[in-house]
Amino acid sequence: MFLFNKSKAINRPVIGLYLILLLTTLFFSSCEKFVDVGYPRTQLLDSLVFKDFKTAETALLQVYIDVRYNSEVSAGCGLNYQLYVDDLTNYSVDPESKTFKFFNTSLTDKDENLLTRHWDARYSAIYKANKLLVGLDQSAAITVANRNQLKGEALVLRSLMHWRLANSFGDVPFITDVDYRVTVNAPKLPKSKVFELVQKDVELAASLLPDNYPTADRVRINKKVAQAFLAQIYLYSKKWKEAEDLATELINATGTYALETDLTKTFLRQSKETIWHFAESNPGSPTSEALHYAISVSPFTNTAYVAMSDDLLNSFEPDDKRRNAWIGINTVGQSSWNYMSKYKVLNTIASGSPELSVVMRLSEMYLIRAEARIERENFSGAQQDIDAIRGKAGLPGTTATDKPSLREAVMQERRHELFCEGAHRYYDLKRTGTITQVLGLKKPNWTEAAINLPISEKQKILNPNLQ
Image 1 (cartoon, rainbow, N blue to C red):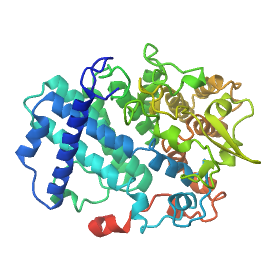
Image 2 (image 1 turned 180 degrees about the vertical axis):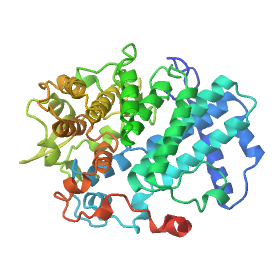
Image 3 (image 1 turned 90 degrees about the vertical axis):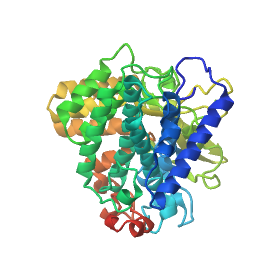
Image 4 (image 1 turned 90 degrees about the horizontal axis):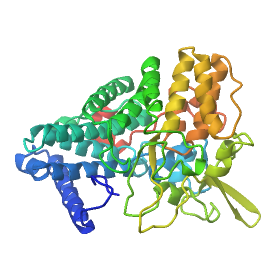
């Protein structure tokens, strides 16, 4: 299923789709080079993409592709975050390797090549989203309804990149311009200010987007996706009432979403729990997570050199169904290693992959609401939400009753429900101020300086305001 299909059937020739993608990619690539040497944008370049809805929609598709590639669900970024915390173990002995450096939190500003997908590539996606937004505002050939839809989607995608940058690096530039002369020396903004600007953009997006998904699968952003993102933003900003209200709105949308009590269905294309998932990278291809988390040989000899940590594995209760449904085991000789197995399909399926990489799902909304209710001292409501998640895992209700124990309970459920999805564990430890307390005991090289990823020396030379 491609992002801009309007019906359940694929009506456009595949070759035509790839040709459009190629032309759009060439446009963005050549335009970036044009801007990089300091020349202003031209109306001619803008008109090549925004002459009608179809070409503007195809430009949006390229932004989706970039966001998927540079998101925490992709192998490169996702594995890094799990290694950085306590969910994966590194088996590489090369001190210069990516897995070794992320696991041992030994990254420095010299590691440009290891940080590029976390920094450079995200700002590249932001540039493309900004280019799209400028073109949409200047286009008279696109109807208001179509312009609002594309603008809302682009705002969410741009916001998602800024959000991940701020959560990973702390204070970062917030870029809304496409003129290199403006952006080359963009100042860092405080993380809290970036959060504020992201919130405003996503609130605007929610007001522009339609209720219905633009595609048969939930691979494009609609109003509910923006609201789910807002619920997360409000939670991180400690706006408890707003977080609770929006999470409740998603939970109450029972005609569209429901928890999957059969855990094997959670990550399927037709899962009722999915709020937003990425389209396949190629028709029928397996998810990035399935390919890169699964272990078929010893982690000492594989290309990733990682396996699930004993710390994560042993934190599950013995009867937790998630342990059996979402954790695999590989045995070589007398040794065994565990791995994340939420995604099972490892082969290309011509008719379309039954699994898609999940970005947002309903379980997180229950956990967001539980946390917000704890802070608002609605302890019984928080217990109900925690129990909804524990219940589908086959576990009894929580025994936590007061604020400290409920806080601990919801964080434990977040770890078990969302493990190896995005960067939840890393972001949770940071936003709750417990990252040093938790990782300082587990990582010998841990220091306060490791709380944020380092901005590379190359970037600081290019933009002295990043110092």
